[in-house]
Length: 322
Image 1 (cartoon, rainbow, N blue to C red):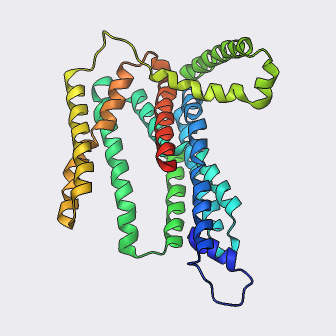
Image 2: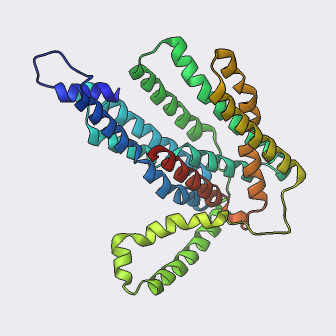
Image 3: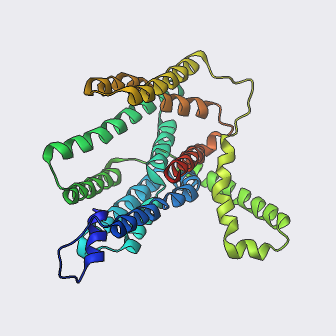
């Protein structure tokens, strides 16, 4: 659809039939998609902050914020990808609005925080596994349904918008808040103290503190410092045997899945990837459950999972640009 929009924009006002295979149009299309991929930087900048907000303002408002950003961004993209309204700047705006929510990984992190709030420790890994299973099922069901229905890309986007509206309504009407008002107030007081201490350290480090505030570096540093929560150095608390076994099995299956994908040259060969994929999916809930058990601060679960999402978004940005 981006290609159609670029082609329409370049050929607009010309009498001859559209030529969409010219090198100039191909190059322009690649440039537009490259700039759109850079919105992943916004994902990195907001991941820790959104996770932190779920600690201070509650899980439900943050989940609503993430879905709303995704919905508004999708609506903008749907309109912009109409050839006559196509604009690379507005397309970038739509992608930026989507990225303000922090991506699917931040949503998964806040969802894991919700599970930690309401599920006892013994059943958390099972609950997180179900969350990953339903997410994977939905990611497979969507493309499969679109291919069976034989919808055009535009109608597929429209259905995606409607499903996001439905998800937003479900959260508003039926999802209760999992974090108590007392814990939210306590988290806000703690954050206020930490922010004052951080500002003092920044002003001590930089001789001209006004430059830091002017450039917004204090907010940037504040949004990235959540990643220090991932540094867990509690040596007496080792991974138990079950966690270690699951992680090793998931890692081996991930390697097997990638290997099968490289060497498979038939449909049957690709289908053999499915068992490896199923066991590899054990890795995410096991890792999250294990890390949260050894997290140094249980009051920062949202910020902790936000830091995990921040790290994931950094890796994804590197893979896109490489």
